[in-house]
Length: 350
Image (tube, rainbow, N blue to C red; front, side, top):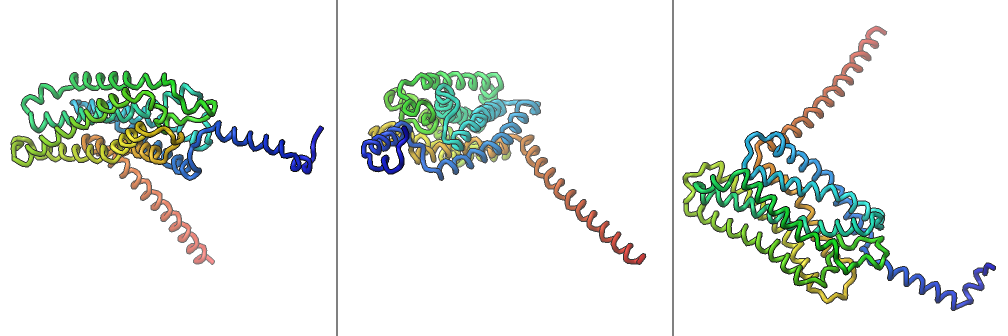
């Protein structure tokens, strides 16, 4: 038997049940942020995906397939492009989540996305540390550097970093604390925020020390010694091009670390040390994750500095686009000119 609107309004018990059910549905779904954050995130990830795929596929093609004479830096660049591509190819799932405000891919894939959010900066920083060490050997120890800076040892170092980083990220797949359980796994807070990792803080801080502080200290140590040698003129035997290339690589890595990775790890520490009373959404955590994702695009500067072939490829693409534009303009100009000449001939005949 249906009740009319007046009976429903006059029955406070029904209204109370309705309010309680509304509150329950609100509490069952964690806060995912305002609409403007989701829209900005969708736009940002679309930009990163389009630019990142083109840049890193080009880099992987240049370094892995077209570079005939490979060296240690080439191997490191292949690994950087491979890590970036792996991360970028997972971005469409984030974009779907930001667009729908709903996670349709299940809990396991959400755990993979959350683990990869931690995996990517750890892997990138250690690769940057290897590149910094390579530059140190090239500038400060050029005699011994030829023995250490070869392709087999660079491959061993890269594989070691992959195994080490993956081994530290796998336990994140089996975390017992799950902020998405309250929404019946229709959200994926795990890939946006690491608040659920607080119960395992000793392991988290060991991971921070080994995958953030250690590579940062290696990079700083290499840069300090390199700058000291450059200032005191102990690198006179090196070619000017080698010096300039090394300085540009160092500056690029410093900018990327300061802009993309330091804010992310500072936020990580603050969130892990929080009191646990905040919700499952943090604007600061989302913003620093955006900055960390930006590294996949900023690597184009590193590729451009390292490889002459990559420079030529980028320049050829730019020139080809300019060529197409000029051809289109000429064709339009020729087409309009032919129309005018035909009209002039017609008027003359008349």
